[in-house]
Length: 178
Image 1 (cartoon, one colour):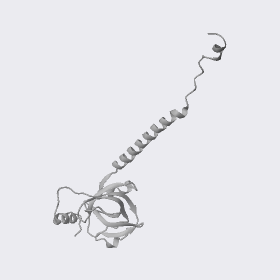
Image 2: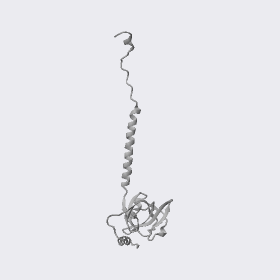
Image 3: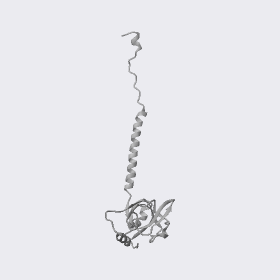
Image 4: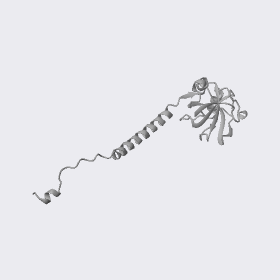
């Protein structure tokens, strides 16, 4: 076919258009955001899991090394709890003991449901220098110019439910009477 009709149709391939880089950037951006979110969750989870766990005696001994780092501490609350307010929030002030060492505690927020003197607790917080609000109401304060400021409390319990005499024995082991 030659003639006027064949000349009207040009069948030579046109140059290919470059793909828009915007179409490729969206999936890459989504993948990067998902990876960043996963890394963020892992860092937060592993950071919480690596909090160091100490008894009161070790926490007092390592106070200068711990600085203002958060850590977990276990001990037995002594009798003489003081309820007060700290920075506008409800707080419980008490003395924690283990292995003959004492630490004053200011727990901000609600205490654990089973919290009571003589029942071991696990607290999470950091050392704070300065006066303890309500320290005059404590029976046997450490009164060393430092206190643990905590915001997380778990009552340490197991299937060994002790009678009142067992709790009193824990308190007596710290040199206090209840």
